[in-house]
Image (cartoon, rainbow, N blue to C red):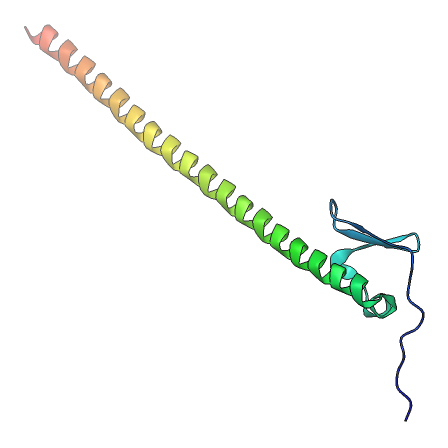
Length: 110
């Protein structure tokens, strides 16, 4: 029974942490879609760096999701505040109209 040996390791590997891509022999892959065939071609250190980059990518995606949820909650708060202010304004306008009407009725009856 023969042991499975890795094929020759890839020498031309560049990790781009700005956009979470890995460039292998001139072909760029997103870190979350690197295939197992390509991973088998990486040596141990490159595979380890890819794993760290993948963890960093997941943490960054979680951060973006948290920021998105926070922005939605802030927007909902602003909408709720605007609705409350609108109700108060409509109530004050209605009171002003009834007061004006009441004043006219009182002045005409006198």
